[in-house]
Length: 283
Image (tube, rainbow, N blue to C red; front, side, top):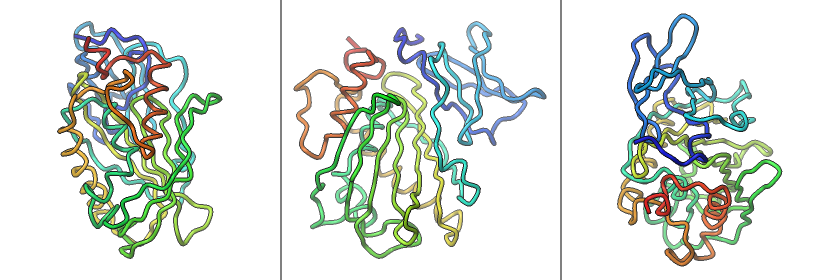
């Protein structure tokens, strides 16, 4: 059954990789609705399978985007995506039995680095999450976490030695999350990694990381493998969280100081009135 949540319906969602589109319509699912995606002589197409209704389309960030409702604004922008000197790595879709909102929250969580991504993004005894700043930026309607620092034993595929990473997190839409990572040997530059989530059902989604990197030395396969290993490690954790849906009610899950970005994200979702993928939506 298609979602009844108007907040969710009126969002833009990445639903396919542009380079994968063919003339043959491919079925997929968005917010409980069966849709199909394809490309014809006039460009990309998306339609509601049940009614045949054409849905709006956008090509952006290597993906095809659509909406089941009427978005109030255009898709957010990523400055790094316009830099011709960056390498673009499209990492492929991974399906997860979890709320897409849980996937966003896991992406924001630095505390799990030493235990889930051991000797890659974190390691013992460097388990403390230094204090950082989380905020809802009202002028752009986004959640940001800045001044984040964490010791990473292998910060990138090209830098296997350990060092403190300078990070910032951005949530520009309920089902999108981004990481900006300062490039150690290139002052003023940041790598950008986005995670685009396509919610199939409240407790089922798929997601694709897309990266805009300054690394010119590593092979494409090495960069892709590095990110896929991390993402597949995350999938194990996300799929084992209970409940599968994200609780927005106070006191259902007790946050710590390290969870301030999660607290801001949940507050932002609640202010919007979004219920799809939450325990409130299942009630």
